[in-house]
Image (tube, rainbow, N blue to C red):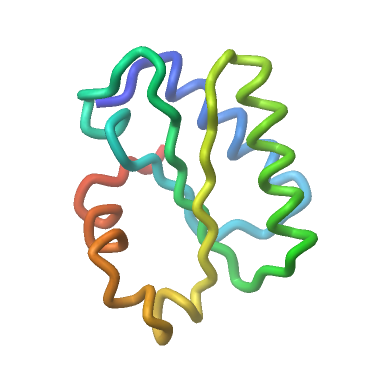
Length: 106
């Protein structure tokens, strides 16, 4: 279960993303979503976009760094496109299955 602090951090990250990027989905996954995170665990965030360029991926990483720096957390975005989720090898990934099962949408 996410802490209130983590929820606020992800909400701010998502808000900043949506200012300039068309985002389809954002979910927290990993130890923070499961509620068994160590104090220094990163905040794993799955971001789904219609399409993605290297510049867009860099912008997402920049936003993650900015928000994480402000909240003293490490935000680790994992970015995928709708096409990758529907047709690519990622669609059969155990990681995607775990995100679907444990991921927390805000």
